[in-house]
View 1: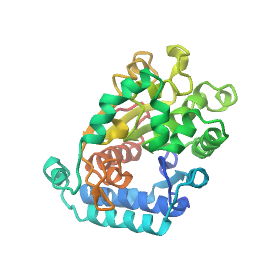
View 2 (view 1 turned 120 degrees about the horizontal axis):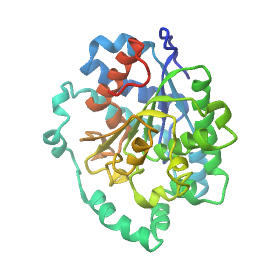
View 3 (view 1 turned 180 degrees about the horizontal axis):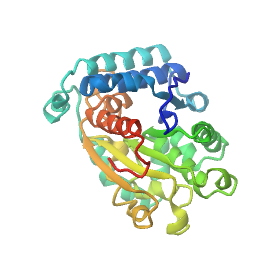
View 4 (view 1 turned 60 degrees about the vertical axis):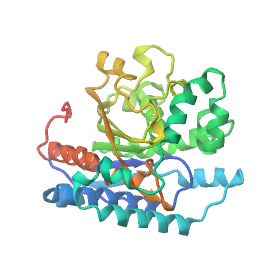
Amino acid sequence: MTESGKAGAGGTRSILIVHGRDFKPAKDTLLDMATAALRAGVERDYPDDVTTYDAISKDIAYFGDLTNALLKEKGKHYDPTLDLGDRSNALIALKAVTERKRFGIRQYDCLPGKSAVPEFIADVCAPMLGAVGMLLPVIGRISRDFREYLAGSSAYAEQVRARVRNKLCEHLDRGDRLLLLTHGTGSVIAYDVLWQLSHDARFTAQYGESKVDAWVTLGSPLGDYHIRKYLLGAGQGSKRTHPTNIISWHNVAAEDDYTCHDNTLADDYSVMMKEHMVSAVTDYRIFNLAVRYGKSNPHSSIGYYIHPRISKILCDWIRATQLDISPNYIF
């Protein structure tokens, strides 16, 4: 399902969401949950911008069916009704937090089952595991689909990239002012697709000069040194290693989210600014208040989407595109 609305001379304003790993509900359901969480944050913090938000195109690059099939083949079980019910409960609870100042450490420390242990283990163990070649087996234990994406023998990785690439190109083809919103391992897939459009000869003639207004990464593992070795373009030299089609990059990392245990990206991708490939890479640290299945889940996409930091990034972008400011802006 695609909701669309026209902007002025700047073209159609669009938000394109790329989800992350693990089992996912149906495409329309996942898009509805994501946009409801984003809207709730805008309504809470910037009520004057709700009408404009409602008119903006919202779309999703969906590959959940591919991931669901892969995980079921590997013996994993999924209850979509329970998953959707728990996502809905998490969103209801988060919508009840009506003041942005309550998205802080005091509220976070009161969540059930809150623990810094997974992030601590990731911080300590990831460098050692990567050094001895054990990182992929460990990732395979935690996330079989992400392991398959990084280094599997099936067609899964290219099928997933094609889903994201086709949807991104659909928006670029119509000249959209685009905010790309990616969660977790979906940011790795989006990075690879952005690199393909920048440097892969199959796509550069048509998309080499296209730009994404703003890329927002949520709970991204792109800071992990060993994960970066698997990115498309890795080791090809500063001019070809990184994408060249992002204007502003905003990276949001939640406390205790082990997926983004290396929670800053500005240092890891500083060469992109040095080489004038991106205008800015900005890191933000937040507290994710989502509770899933009775326990704190700092990686929850809903908890990221509804957070005041995301609302501010989104509404700053809305206002910039409303004024038809040149894409060469930083907010």
